[in-house]
Length: 85
Image (cartoon, rainbow, N blue to C red; front, side, top):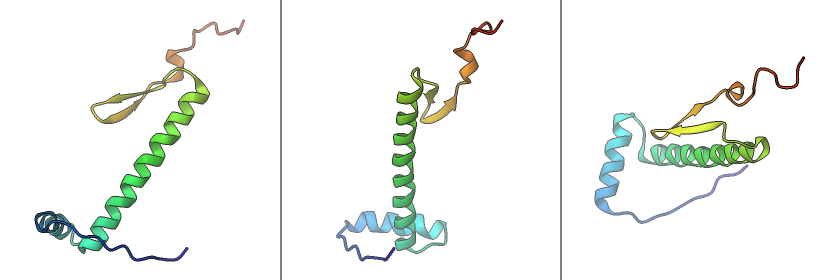
């Protein structure tokens, strides 16, 4: 996998905020922006995977709580006598 160049024009105020955030993490602005883009891309792919899992298994087994995800055990949906005698 090679690398490419991305050039963009941003507002001076936004650049200053990016510099500030990057400096707090002892990073360059470029590294900070790339890390942010990678994290956002991961979040999108993770949410797509969760959606596909929910389609496969049926009822929602994951519930969103205040922006996070909390796992709900499948046993909450299964009765104790689930066909086992």
